[in-house]
Image 1 (cartoon, rainbow, N blue to C red):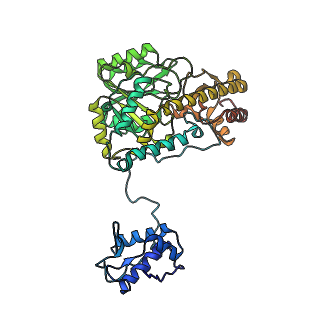
Image 2: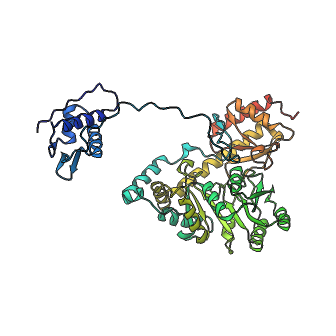
Image 3: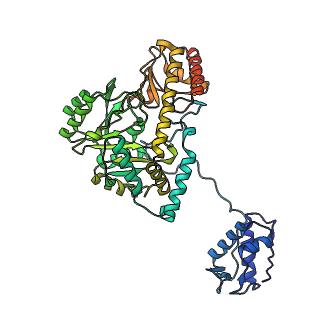
Length: 489
């Protein structure tokens, strides 16, 4: 078939739009009659000297507008009826737009502050962040390919808001092996990170004016998630044995506590481990007073000295523990894979609540992670990460001791990705500011204090930097210490 197209290549806009406009105009003028066969995409691309994908896009645009029809195994034809008397006017450029107003014309809630990105620095010692250079990029890519080859388009459809079944089963098996839990698939919900799991649980557990006990020092994003329900938070001290359970008992004599949120393993930010006696007493109190324990199993995977302590959930026989975990540190935070283990009655309601705002997770990612668990790649990767972080911890400890001696006091953490250090008599805020000027970022106690007061503590991370970078960062931190005036005025 002879087919010539009057195509203007100098018109602005995408080339496929120009091709579609030219074909539509020929149909409207009667040069291409209804039912006429059009050349295939490859043949037309060759005659026009363009990439085949450009013609494919042009045909898709024309079919969407109703100018042409594609018939399986036969080809592409001019539609028997035209969509309109005149061809569509393909816009050369977007029409004029007014700028979005910089000021709101309505009121917002005052209890939600704007998002503030943390300061960036070349040497990131803020703590709790993994080194993305260690992420298993190639292994993860293969897992995505295998998952999509097995499940195909099913992974692109709506799915179970509790998460992909294979991943819930895989997480249950992993937790059974490593954490002493034995959850069935119905006990597990996959979330977009641990924060989402905590928020969902809080929304279902708490009502305005309910009392929630939290650690202080503690994890401020969790406080914000829980307080968004209207609950009243009550800080409980943390010492070298973790949450001071006797302080919680005292609170229980004065107020009804609805929930307790804590990080018993590698407490955030102090890194201490909740002692065995306090664990047992906390579980007893939860049973007696019928409050929920929201257990955030922070950094459990990265334990270097001795055997890691099992979660509170492993000893729960009364259904009082909501266990919250994440794979953000193990794989990469951008994958957004967290999980909650709880009785099905809570999991089902969390799924129903999730549908209102998120519908479901990314099934392709969940399927890929399930592949990593089932073939043992995730376990092998965790072992590699643990060895790397163990070595980095030891380098940071050695460097800090060499630079500061007893001016910076800390216990070597048994696990996690950071250490908690006390700097007696030092203005740590001024020190952190001086460090940032030297391209080193650390976090001070003010970020973790329930009352926001300044205290002479720093959280110094070692997960993000390699060993040479840690040595350089420690040296810069020492120079910043000398420049900052050291003592509080």
